[in-house]
Length: 127
Image (cartoon, rainbow, N blue to C red; front, side, top):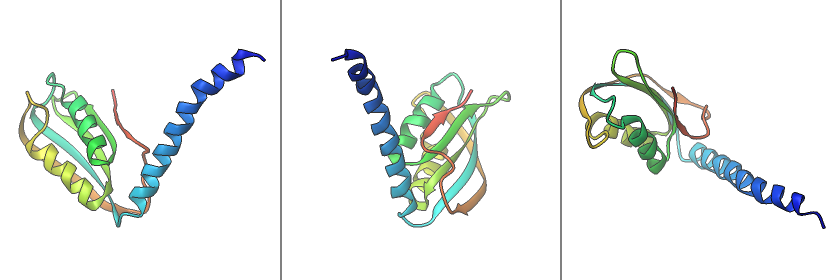
């Protein structure tokens, strides 16, 4: 028996499981009531304080999808999608909590809308 197919299967199995979990997350979100999408921009001391990493972690804990990135003007911007109550929880976190060393002066939300399906399968940091 050749060990290569077994090794390939061992590597492929976690990837397949991750794909199934992502599909399950998307399916669970789509049945949890209306889905919302909102863009955000956070102003204050939000760069150089691990804000993006904490945002990604909090989004995954809450169970929303989307992205976050630094801007050239010293803010952090992104998009959050998911069930309305979870999006609202993430909006509150982005407005009031942030990373431990951050200082949030204000958070602007825009383009808030109801969507029929999620555009992302996870939450990621963009560069």
